[in-house]
Image 1 (tube, helix red, strand yellow):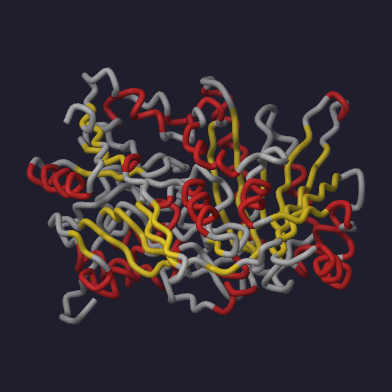
Image 2 (cartoon, helix red, strand yellow):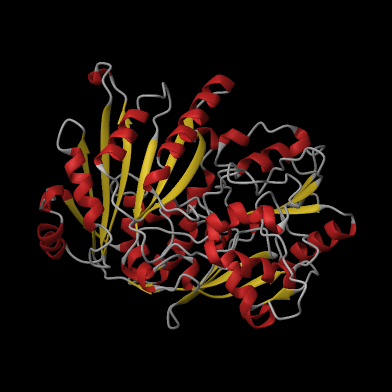
Length: 503
């Protein structure tokens, strides 16, 4: 058992705690905010035991899969006085692919790279519509929605879940039939560490052609950047479902810039077809990007997963099996915020973004646009908890990043991202202003560090993440976990009206 239980007195505690952290901002969190013990179960029965033991001793439980957590809520607490146990699912990572049924069971501790590798090893024409970064944990990714380059063709990762196994607050193992359709609805995008511990997901695999086409096109502010982005905003959600083009805006920091701010726009595209067909589509719909045959690369779907993740050319897809092993020291410290854009940003808004890029001295700022439209616009806003469907051109994400321990540097970057977020207010969705559930932001509304925020208080951020679905989530929470055992700073609280009725 010593290999499964790690306490602050164990030699293994620090390495286990830090291994899955992908935001070094939380690497040196004070001991009072860390778990009093970390459990690394190798069986589902050990997850059950950890839940029951925690309840018996009045401990809170937090659950971690891959560690990509912008606010660290899966493994630290904002309340120094709140003791909790961390269940780290790192050893629950098996993937079983069933090609005839086009499905797979994947344990929640697996990372996307491991899932993709297993799928590609079994079939060259099946895929799963999830994220670009291969070290993201499957458990957290699906529990908040999950998007990637197949978004416009097949929707969110959470849209493609067939079944799940959940350990509830009573220690029971429930599948879809056992938990019921309301709970099954809630866990697919309604936020992690809220309804129980999902230990495995049955996912639907989707068809892809044997050859797909990828491209990366960079434009700078020295050219007609604003014109290209304006056209991008008007067409990107109306392109064929088979085509996805993400846009990342950044600042070039180099001696060649000679003190001037140079804005770079990188268009990352994936087309589920061959180059010739793609070029026809682009010539008709987006000629301003000036995509050429030489700028396109045909490849298999699994090769495109490596390509979009930024791996060097000709990297073996076996490298995906090493994706969880990268040190957190390789990552910058991050703060992220998100919005949804329903009308193309006017030129003055783009110019405001350019000006904001001048305001941070270190750590290049990033703004990313993730197109919707396609299949996303045809899925009901209440099909799963993720509500940001029809009417949204794209999701926009803001990233502040920095290195080092200097608190002044951190403060400067937080000031930058908060200022940009305020500036964007008139140009993004409102009533409520939308936010992506997997980009948790503790700046939204009231957050009780003990995780006992009232329903009324939680509605502020809850409706930004889930809009009209928030009340249903709170009713589901009241049914599956009325004592609010599973909780964190932004977990959905239980809500029961004074009248009777089903959740």
